[in-house]
Length: 480
Image (cartoon, rainbow, N blue to C red):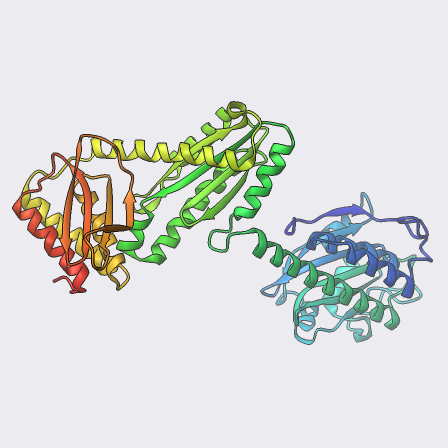
């Protein structure tokens, strides 16, 4: 993973790497070998390691680093150095800014390589102020560790300096010269092309396999994970999740708040997946999410879900209903059957939650309070809904149902030229309980049905308020 220094022992000069001698790896042939290595890379980390190894081989270096440069800060991400020599590690793995190292600032500005020598060709220490030796700060850094020569080339990706490649030689090797600068620049360009390629490939994989809103895997990836888990013959679990309250948040607070809620759900699922080795968290679509696990007992999955959901509550009073299906219970089944059984379990959990909410939410028995709360909550919901009849009626129905302690609602439309109504939208989760009753509010060709608590006030004042709110929704009158 990028961001930490990888240190490896270098191959001694003249030794073989991958069956090739040092002579084979020099010059144009070495660059060709490096190009083939880069072509096999599929991740940036692999490109970085291949670049460092190629630089050691092609340039005959004693040590090499590949560094990432962001916001004028240089940070080493891969180091090739001699074993058991802390001088090189200290010198090459430090993090520094451009205002501390003039050579780095010049590299960023001019995108040109630089060379520095602490000693001349005869092994004599260069004199202070000798401009032919290179940047003064780099010369002093070389002198501190007893190295002779250093060469750094920029790695430019998509017309921006991505990082730099640095090679260092000790006294037993000649100083870097102009031809080797050209070789280093070609190698850096090959590495830059490979980085750009794998980065684009990763972006494409992300677009194909991930949900763009939440960053979780998508339905296709979840299906593939379930198929692979079932094919392994080990216990496979599918957890289907649904967001309780998303429509209310969308209606009352807007779709930006709804998107934030979906991202919060994704965070909960991601945390649950992190707690279960080998789990895949995915967004199926809309407010449906799932978790696919393999080789984990159902009890372990259930514990991880309940613990995570309880520890990380959702904003705006929303909640997650979920159901679990396992091959340990169902036996050998197809993936679609496992998803279907988990979805049924999730629906049952949703109904249980609705019943529990209806029992614990005290109904508004006082008609004055009922009218005040109805007017306040429903007017806000209607005003935040999309400017069309159906969205506004849905927003009203959801708000009124919740205010009056109900559990479900429906919006119906009369078919032209008949007395037959068709359901155009429904919401909530019917509790099938005698503790609720249904109210119908009609306006023109529209009927709104809401299931409310039997203990809630539903007298003339409440009915008048409900009729007025439906009229506002249908006639597109702005609430006062």
